[in-house]
Length: 425
Image (tube, rainbow, N blue to C red; front, top):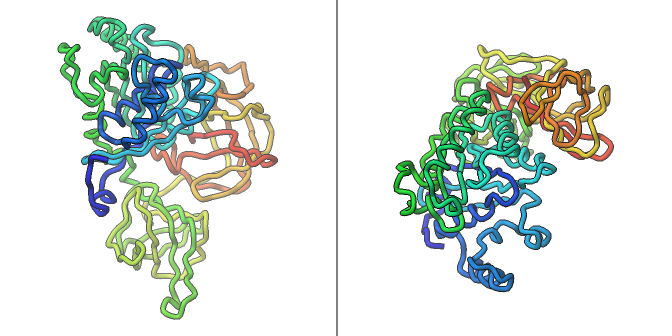
């Protein structure tokens, strides 16, 4: 690796999670391979192995897609089947990439890869323009409230790097995306195969004056991606060391879902509603003055309250919604269709409970983005609006307000398989 960074500096670096989406053969894996290769984020032996594999397959160029296509079936077909995660860094930032499949039947994999992403790279083949899968992926990015969307118009080398092709795709994308909840949309003309505008600026497209993809990824402002207004601390674990030196120690470990807590702040514990004051915030052996999303730590309260896993610590003066009848936008992830009236397990933050499907309100037609109120059958890769009733009240925010306290997953109790990803309306 060319970048020499100390361990301390690496730990302090900002992390950007991004996902790739596009139709089959739009060049997602090649783009990621190009990012890794041109940013010097792969080892020499990896590169040599890819070169040998490319020669063996009789390919004209080094097939950088092989960097992410790890499954044998993927390499043979030249497609991505599963979500492939890659980790790399530059001197400015750390990155986690989720390379998701392009097939319609693998839309659920995009939901998985995009659920925690700061940015989504939506690839469009310059020859084909905006297609059904482009609309589908943009809608999912909107539904999951991914803060930043970068539309990469790929294979510009196959349309002679013409500006009018790029402008036409940009116009058509904006035409339908104006109806979606997308706030920051950028467009970059690229050639993943040749490297144009990926890490290095293209000499073939002088008409494009915007940033390269790598520059944009390194400089996207993501500090506001977390809700910093409403402090939420779901309790994961009660820390009781049972050692003589920590005889009376009782801390509540977890990760800040949003906002900030400070020592001395008055807080309320849900669901009991009892209040206390933050006495101490620990992170391993360090004492912190405050804890901010997405930091993890252990909070110690002044009072000895009944707090356990599944409870949530919130500001004393800040309210949070609670109830049992919850309306969700659902992405169905299972081959087995949803059963109206069926009973499922639910995970919400650190809370485990059960629910019943009360009602299917509508299903979304991905092609037109219309709501179909007549078709109540929710199957694999379908997106719809449902109402569930939980066995006990949950405390939540809308997904629009908070991606962490506003999301749930639905699990088939018989198989323990995650069958649905829900966003609270």
